[in-house]
Image (tube, rainbow, N blue to C red; front, side, top):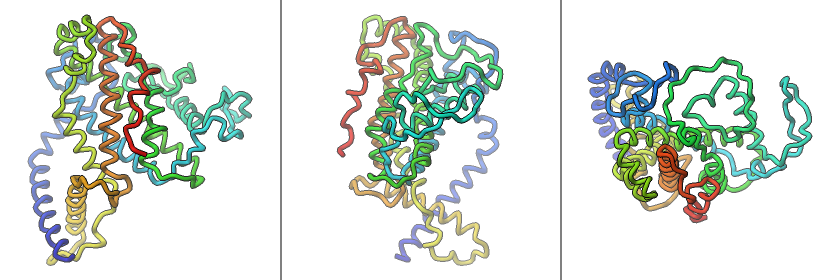
Length: 378
């Protein structure tokens, strides 16, 4: 066992040296080139936005490189949220309408009162409605990248004045208003929760729905980012997409949108991140490094060694449960079977509306659930 750890130490030192060299060489450039999209600016027609040049301005949300960087950052949010949710049991009672009949409501003046008519909401619904109402007051859902699960419940009055957003997405046929959160909610409850949480009830109901809200909001943002992907690709080939949609060729649109190589990278990256983030560091198990008087190098080496072990485990296809908090293979499957397909369905639906047509019936949110059933073997 000691020889294994010594080998890992050697490998980690190589990895750390290369990493430090890369960081030192690119840090100044990276700081200058990193793009943070700010949802504020003068109103601009979407036809004026370029998807081919990347400069630090709002319109660069349509640069595919910028979009991919944002989606990569969102992977951490999603995976960490799933890791947090996995510490609690499934606690199915929190998803049952009227499962908690003693819920309290807030009146218009934020005073606690009895809920005279809960309309059969679950504890998760209750938590989402309250969270979204609070976030809406600070204009979260005025941003084109945010989508409410209960838009009819959002307060009309906000605490902050509205921002003057540029017209980033097309309003044609209400393409910019597409919202597939109803589908996402069903997928999450029926498919994702059973895969990331153990069966049973540990009575941690409040903590459970708090984590559920974080997972749902993170995945919702990710899949609806497909509208930005679709707008970017439309601007690069408007005639090609218009021709396919005029012919009602949804499969052709999907094929034109699909980049199999990029999707494969997303799957491998998600699996590796889940393996890395979901395990304990190896510092307590590693022998001291000879000739090192402080613990900094040991910590760095332990982190690198943990990453090496996580990478080996992530690439293991034997199918047994890993030692991490969430099975990396499960995270990969969630991306492969739900997150990526739902993102692409939103892209196709957006493009249909963008080109002045209603999406095919099988892309209607009320009909999509059948497509996403039975991906996991329970």
